[in-house]
Length: 113
Image 1 (cartoon, rainbow, N blue to C red):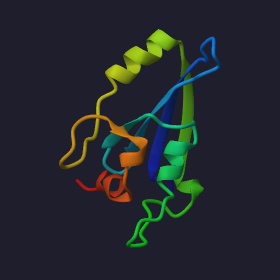
Image 2: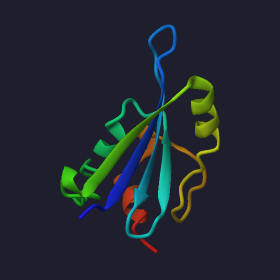
Image 3: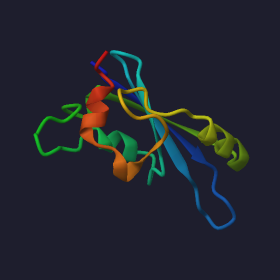
C-alpha cells in the first residue's frame, strides 16, 4: 500500500550544468503535505522517508510504500512554482522546509488528522 506520494520538480540545466529541485511529500491517508526546498537530487526526498530516527520508527518500512515522480520545468517556471509551492500542512510549521531540517517526526505528523 502506498503511504506517501513524492513529487519532485527539477529545473532544466542552466549554462553551467546546474539544476535545482524542490519536492512535495503528501500523505495518502490525510492529504497533508510538506514542501522541501534545497533538495540535493530527485531521489533525496523519497530517501528522507526511509531515514531511521533515534526512536527507531521510520515513516515507511520500504520503497514500495512510496510513489515518486519527477517533473521538469524551465528555469523561470521552476522559480515561480517554487515560490508559490506552499508549505507544511502539519501542526506547528508554516513555510518551506530545507532538506537538512526535515525530521521523521515531521513526516509522521502528515498522517495525523
